[in-house]
Length: 398
Image (cartoon, rainbow, N blue to C red):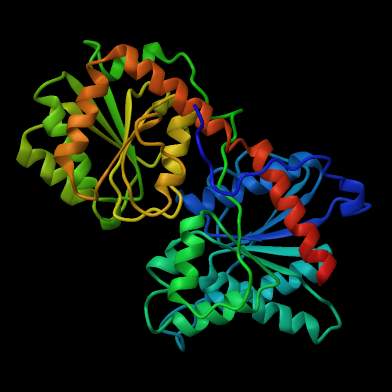
């Protein structure tokens, strides 16, 4: 059985000495949120720090997964003061100043920014300020999706997105689909390299949480899980409707992890369907791996996903995925092997596929192992060298 992965080639004989006689100081600009980009930026920084790089996070709040002390990790808080003159606090200006400050006093060798808007645009401003001081700052921009598919598609932002991407020293995208969509929707002259998101198996793996499972499902009900930022694009209402259909045939519970603008309407929908007794809204959770460890099925019916990190985290915990076929999801979820993919909005088919797996323990077990093997292809140890090699290329040409 072959489980394909776009653009993943193992990098052999990567020579750190050839890369640099010392480990680099790398600045990281990201949104310190529970969303995929913030998680990836943080985990990437922590992975590099373990190897000896000095990582400087530059943002307005410490990222959620940046909790434990690490001698190679530094946090530079961006404080944007409020003045009566400004209706909106000029965060971008404060961020540019903080980047300049960090480069000057921490001797940062390369800046890695996550999201074209506003981070790549701000990075370009900082780069020009530093250039006036005789300092060259190489900039790597990683596209995660929202900056292309949602924010970037707004005509008022499009010129800034194009300029930011084209004036970055290096650009990566988290999926082949996102790369293609970027070229299709914007006038891009820069190269874009696909480097997928990844999983830290020290954290995301199947563990024994039977005591936890008994608390959620005391009568051995099956457990369905969904995690997201509860925006319309995630189609959480589809999750609830799928669960309602499955529940009619199989005793089960639904765990919803995350928070956002759609949470209140989803709570109302559960009341309307009279299924509240079997649905748990758990809000934002740091230790989501403990919840994934007790799951039988992960639901991801999104209207758009540039990569689908949440699905990959579930697969690393041996949880098959029932998903839509949107965006970059087909690069992760292999239909009929690691789970099933359905058309966006086809809740009947999603429910049917979920029931099919839950009623066949043998098939469910096979899918669990397939999911794990596919997730291993995105192990952080496989992906990290791709970033190191890319950094080397950018530094060498800058």
